Length: 205
Image (tube, rainbow, N blue to C red; front, side, top):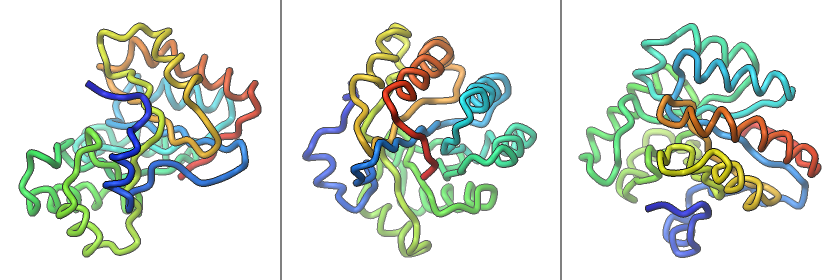
């Protein structure tokens, strides 16, 4: 079970995290979780290049170590990088010290001040530990979840999830993963084109 837009109480409980940007400008932020991997991340990069826009990639350290050439490409093309742990750990089911060490292992590759907890699940005690290590760390959530990871979702519904819920300052989540591919391939370019036609501009976090 997931919600395309996060509920108010969740944003209130985790008020120290970044859910969206407060702006009156028609600026939005595309983000991609779980890469980098060949083919799927390459498709995303080719799509972004076609529309001449930049995005933020929350990378799994293990994937960076396995596919360094894809990681180097996304950096060379001017996209921002975030930490997504080394092994895609679910914070609610992981010991705090193990979680911190996994974050730091990924950080050796990413060297970034951006972090997104896998599954959007993190304990306040884990937030405190991360912040004690990196006081300037920005923990990024989202306010539009495409649902591209949902195998039961149609590609068209994935597209509609994005374009119907975007507003000024939205942080949008797609996944550059094999699981998301069937929906991503259809929804990403179509959503970008629609949002550009609506006057939105894309920036990195």
